[in-house]
Image (spheres, rainbow, N blue to C red):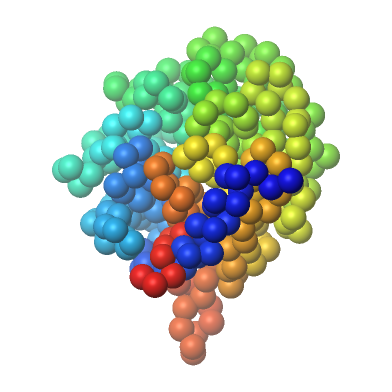
Length: 322
């Protein structure tokens, strides 16, 4: 039986299912993220830059392009409560913190390896970054110095604190999720979540669930308190690269090399909507206040040169008549 929320959102998307694209970069976009107030969207690209857009009604207006990295910007995230600060992880072995008020890099932190995954703790005090050598570095967000460094014996993929900031989660190449106490970083538990590589992890804003995307093309939804799997989503055919919960925690977007983004009703796992794409999707991010989904795909540009990457970011959920 479809819930009233399900029906309300389906009705809403029937009138608001337009996608619009915005030029962001000169190469593919790896990561998109919204500031906590939802006013800005940041994107990180293979072109070694980050871009920041301001959301104005139903469109993104490019505010600035941030240069400084000497290699691909693989992931970025915003400060959890300060809408002016965001941080980028790059293959150039640095992490950079940027301030949109001054449009400058306020700190460059040198790390030991090529950085691929990054997250900011819910209390805003720490930035965790993972590199290709499976080292996770914990950086003090105020002093910009490394607080701790952990070398893992398994392939480390995405990282995340829980919403309470007292546990740290890592998805790994063996299909497990490793949970450490924080700040002690002592192993608490390892969950056998999937038969193959766990690629991404996201916590819902209400703190009830977390979701894991795996190379087996499944998305598993877990109860945070019980650490048990409550349901699995199996509509994708390719490894799940990216996940995002809506601001109310009731919708979960997941994407892969499939040419659509799945939007699921969290409570039932049913498909609420499907966003059609022309190519694989690298990154998805729900707006923190509205049912607007930012995403970026591996689109190619131009009629004549099919190898040129488009470097666009897209917005789904716009009014059909906009």
